[in-house]
Length: 289
Image 1: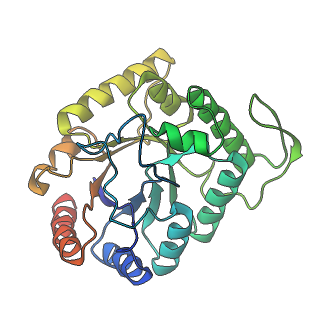
Image 2 (image 1 turned 90 degrees about the vertical axis):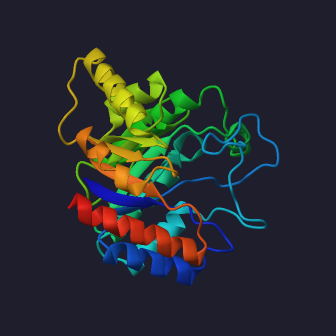
């Protein structure tokens, strides 16, 4: 079982020096990957609360905000040589699919194939609408956008006629280093998300899942594969971020469930807390080796 870290870098704590040193330290202690969440803008009032906190709000420092994933991964890629970099998750239905395809394959090209494209439909209604898209149809739009990206990554010339995207004789280069394309890791717990994982996914990502919840989701995922007349391949990755409160010494339980990659939540980005958390992760890397 490989060990990674989830850290949505936020200003003002996430300075260039902090991010560079963090990436190098993560690589030095043997972590497999760094994963980042994505929100381009935040709102004082939301229709639905953030599912990752008790009060429904993203814990952003006063006067701060979330750094852009693509730009930050470009910066981290230059500071590291082995770490994989994963979006956890990119909000596909509020992104332009051609720009997204270009950004992700360029990152893959520049990192020599170190990118994992974790995707989801998002929970923030206001953010989706502010980006110029509808809320209710975001699932169907996500599927169409993923199809567009897959084809642009794998075909030399693409014609496409969909509900949201239409073009003829379109070329996107360079192609990703990874083949057949950048791995798509699907996040989400509803039935449409599981069907999306079966259709597009090289893996499934569960955030804030304890062992019992992970076991149940793997069962449901296998049922989704069976409904599609397929079996889950051995190389289909199960990636989990455990609850932040879960003791590190209890995390070997995930290996017994068949989890391939465990992505621990960094939590606070204050220097003293980073030192403590990285020491915990280093012990887990050694015990999982």
